[in-house]
Image (tube, rainbow, N blue to C red; front, side, top):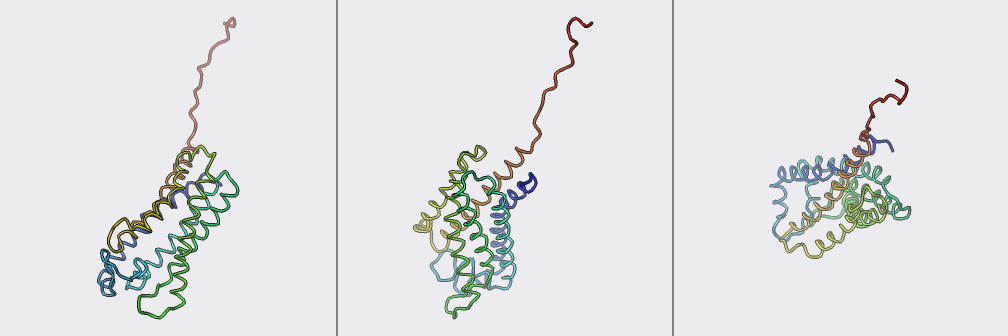
Length: 226
């Protein structure tokens, strides 16, 4: 992979978290009245699937586009990131899991079913996409950590392969936070991992592509010739 495409892959990962979180926050603010009209509250227990419910609001198309673009960015990041792997089996597992992750995110662009509504095929597509994202993340992140062993450029960074342990802890405890606040932290950390690793990939590409400094010795006359 060329230096440019490697850097591009890193930048794709880097912008993933701020893009998805930023657009979701924007859509949520624009649909605030709609979300509360269907019973959602960030700080109280409810059955409304947030942030998926934003797909059903007046600007749900923007959130659908957010999922599609983010899924493509994850795929671009993974294509460059996989070249950093040094172990074949774990690298292959991570690559397949990233593909599942990316496809799952794109599938999440399909509108979800709200509580009390009959199930629909778009709702099933969304649900299966969410399962794909969860499975992809829980496999891709630790497999990447294993695949990065013996790559000196990623020494220390591969320890982020333990990230899913933090995600599982949040899923079971909700961090003691009310309502959907714990799940919001969970989702934010899912995207944060991609941005952290993407940022480092871009940094590695920039470092490897930097011109090496050379010292030119001054010309000296050979002794005895002058």
